[in-house]
Image (cartoon, rainbow, N blue to C red):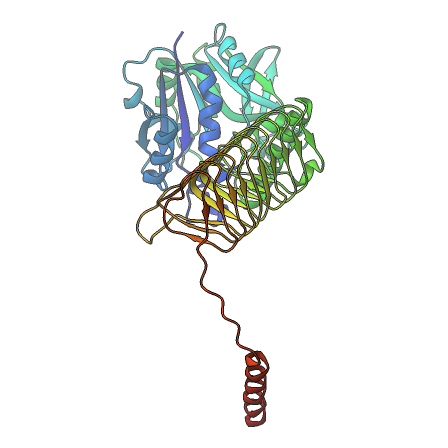
Length: 450
């Protein structure tokens, strides 16, 4: 049976107090909507429909960047969850499989939960996802009779007996497409809010003699985000899980609670991560590397045996080969650092390639930007770049060459050559004393005048 996803992403999220649509707020540096789409992708959906509303254009852009085939529909008026799903009808025209309804602000759904929902559909017309709540509070209660879901009772309408139930409604469901839209057509808005709710589908389905059940998952999977506090809590949940997974995989985290991971961070076993390291999107660290304290990595690849930091920054396009050394206060951007090369202190290497065994001295800068365009620096193998060298790109330094400390390199350096490019030094006896006396007198006059 084929599957389609309908992801509800129309809400403004008033409690977020933000100009950004709620579903675009990030968890682990990935928008919540993308988390939901990736969760649903385990079902290999034939169609994915994103129901947008507030900030529709921005939401659509993010959704189609994740899945270019995602179909975008707009809920111009937010008239309830059933009304939102109804907007997907045209996008699902001709589709005859199962529809799974997800929420763009519920980012932690696990693949096995969705698979169990689809498996339950084999024997039921409508499947609701529920969870056992530690504190049921004001959640809607799922009233079961064996495996059959009899009704969903909202808190305000629940009896004391109903409120004692801890099995609660997540809002997610699975249903055959034709049946789903038939049921939605029967949903009314005779309620205090004047809105059309998916929760009414259970009663309508039961009245029609259809089979309805509920599948259970742990409460953390259904965590919704409605405020900045919720967002922070959700990110903390993600980080705790991701750190635990890395520890289980054989990664050493010296202070796990201080390491921040992105949703796609990949780290190999026997890697050591020191305290206060931040991983942005697109980072892969191979086995046996060391990332020292207070380093920031994004969009980069770190090979086996490399050492990064402390206080290093790897920006997008940084490619470190095996056994490289990137030291304190070093920034690497869009550059390949070949095996065994070292950039140990206070340097910027951008838009460059550095050959194997090369040593980059402290204070070196590849001057890659002319104010309009970026230019590339090529440094060969076993080059010694002296401290405080400025490499004005585009420029090439051949293998085995050397630059003298304080050199400004504006022309290519042939292999095995020594480049020296300093201003001529001139010493003027007694000038320092005279200059200091002049400056002190000037300061005294200024202070007296004040």
